Amino acid sequence: MITIDDALNIEVSQGDTFSLKFKFKNYKLDTDDKVVFSIKATTNSNEVVYTDSFYNTGSDFVTVKVPKGALNNLQPGTYVYDVAIINSKTGNIITCFFPASFIIRGVAHNVE
Image (cartoon, rainbow, N blue to C red; front, side, top):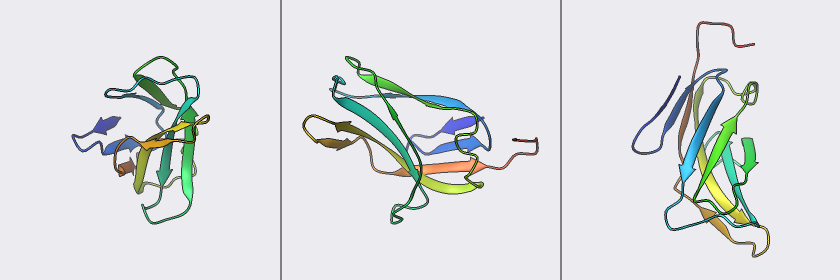
């Protein structure tokens, strides 16, 4: 199960796989852009506990896919996440929104 509220806070069930579509306003991705989805314990922590990069050249959106097992090392609890566009040619970094909560809820079924 996954829910996303108006503040972009995400709540997922432990062990679930999911895809999220992020649409960009007034921006099309070019060949040098990568979209980075990152999760940290807190906004003040230095350690990124999960990150992955996604590409969709020529589009105004990207689909972030979190596959089976990708978050297995994360215990149920509240983390923070954000999405950034990083251009390898110019070095420009665009943070798409301020960090929001990423909440993992424990489940009763086996998640192995």
